[in-house]
Image (cartoon, rainbow, N blue to C red; front, side, top):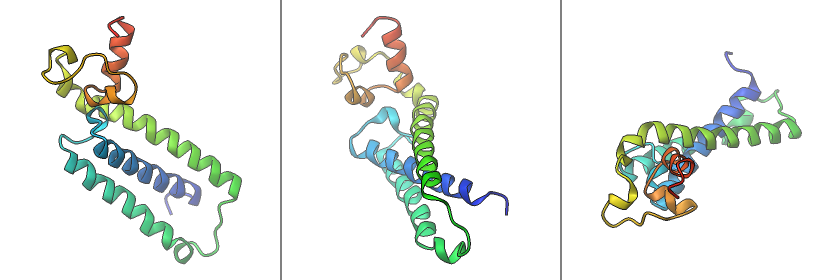
Length: 138
């Protein structure tokens, strides 16, 4: 076995949370968090990224009948996987989607330049938002 039981659990939770974040971004049209150009791609990724870990979790006892992950370890691994998936989503989406948001929001038709909070992710990636804040444009 290449990965320990704890690392398998962490990886499955990480993948599932990536899927949940992509599904939520697609549902709320937060294009700055998309890994894919269209919402449909995010929905397909979400379904696969959530479905596979769920399948493994529902068959966990058949696969690993003699192994156990303690409760406190499981809580810690879940928390770390959630944090890593959130940060990975922000970094990956900024790296992949940055070319889609080259023009400032004020120059794009139909978009308001001064959205704050999560609605700002409808018009830009987290990288662009942080860059605008650092430059004092927001």
